[in-house]
Length: 362
Image (cartoon, rainbow, N blue to C red):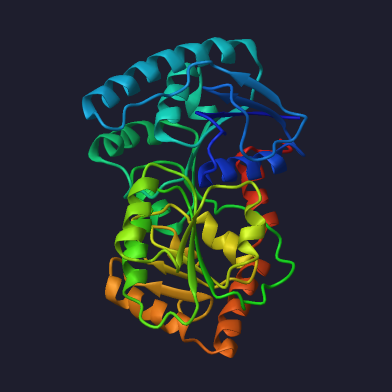
């Protein structure tokens, strides 16, 4: 049985990247020996299987997000310390592949491994458009030198192939099996994600404020993050306390999805958009900007929701207005389209792609 090392900063956050890693881990453990290496020693937000080995480098990433110079220095120090400790650990264990999920983790693993060109598998979770010029240059140097890049969307796969990287299109596994459609009678529009400027929940609130005659519909925003205080102030300033609710991140997120009748996505850019697929697992249609690069692979306009021209806030507002005035038969049609999207999402085919990457059976 082959051994896969999963190397990541932490699994403590309740984020999409962490959800994806745990989803993969729970499937891979059935066919591979799994060793999880993290920089911190905190507990995973999502449930992990018991039969995996966990190792901590004991050097958690700590950055001052309010000071760019301090942040750059922290990153450089972290790369040096983490790659040194990771190298010592990798020398002591026998492994076939190392899986990373961020550019910095990839650099650290590349520096720590003897044969990254044969064993380093990079999973690119963010859009190719999400990174600044420094990160992009770093990726252009490293990515062609590793064994494989798994890419979540078709747009970015083409970009990385253009860099002479061994890029393979491998979408995410669906988290929840499609079992029962929501009744879509709750009049709740849902947004789930870390509260950051990139996720643009502030813009969503601004657009919601311009929806007239909300007809009893509410906007629920679920998550934690640095923008929480700003969002709370915006809700008060726009007099939206009766129609907008902020909910902390919860492990019982499935029950939140079951309450929703529509899902609103406003990210500036997104490698995939895991929450879109999760919402559709419950028959919840989605509205999203056609941001680079992932939502277009999930949302089909007028089929399972609405795909809005990127940054076209006026059209987004019009669609929100349409949703709150929508006849139930039309809402159900879009909900059925969302449910069918997940019914046709082929987890087995995705896992076969991973088996091919890991050359299982050879």
